Image (cartoon, rainbow, N blue to C red; front, side, top):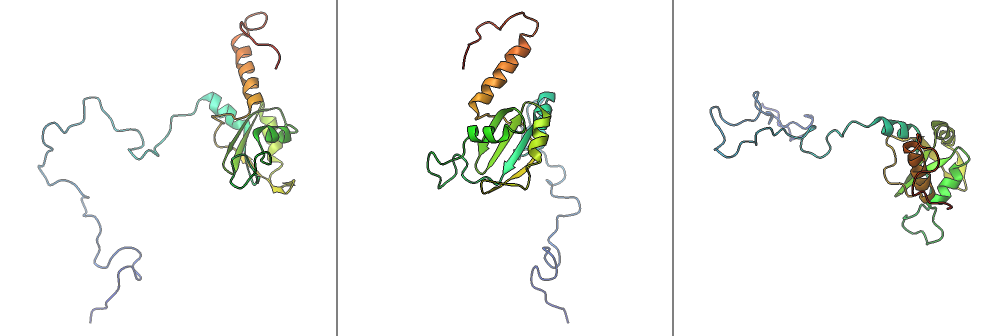
Length: 187
């Protein structure tokens, strides 16, 4: 008497009798070669990580790593700019977030994406202070603050962009005496 088993019952996802790949894997029959003209161009190599688009990314630069150390990810804030059901004028903007987190340190970058936001500080001490707000409540928002995995790539905080540009100009013009050429005053 052979016991009859339905596909997938007590078998995991393998069918009875096995539909597994052959021992040698799937390949063209022995001796088969692709017709002429189908070979990869000379010097061509497949993309690193494969063709799926989710392969490994470029190695982060030292600047990216340093900026990541100064950036926190924040969730749990309702009413972020661009959230559905929020009336214009009632949403929380990059400027509002920068003002709130400025108690922890100088904010140089803010990015809002959906229900998440990222705050970049001028130094890692600001990010460490902001991490202490994890699990707290402020204005009815249950804050979830964690270390960011990436730096901010598109800064939505205009004042922060100006601070970053000024810092970059000062760094490039450090050997010079006086302000960099073309520097705008006031602001």
